[in-house]
Length: 87
Image (cartoon, rainbow, N blue to C red):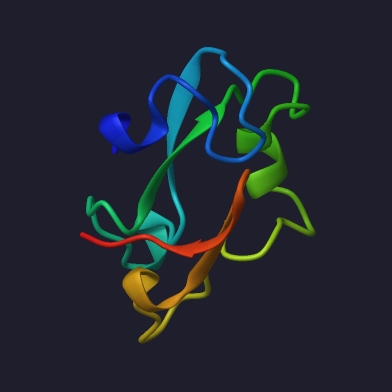
């Protein structure tokens, strides 16, 4: 995942301190897999991409529902376009 991010936020592309975000939250059954983890810029005061991911209207694929959802089969809005994240 760090190799994929290459020091950039996978949401906005900015070079910044990064935090791991579980697309399918651990509380919803999400695992520590490459398809479920993304590197996002800081939570801070909820202005960074990590805060946006936990907000009411996250971009496509940033926050996945509980249930049988497989993160590897859900598109993620990366800063360079919609992609599938593979394990």
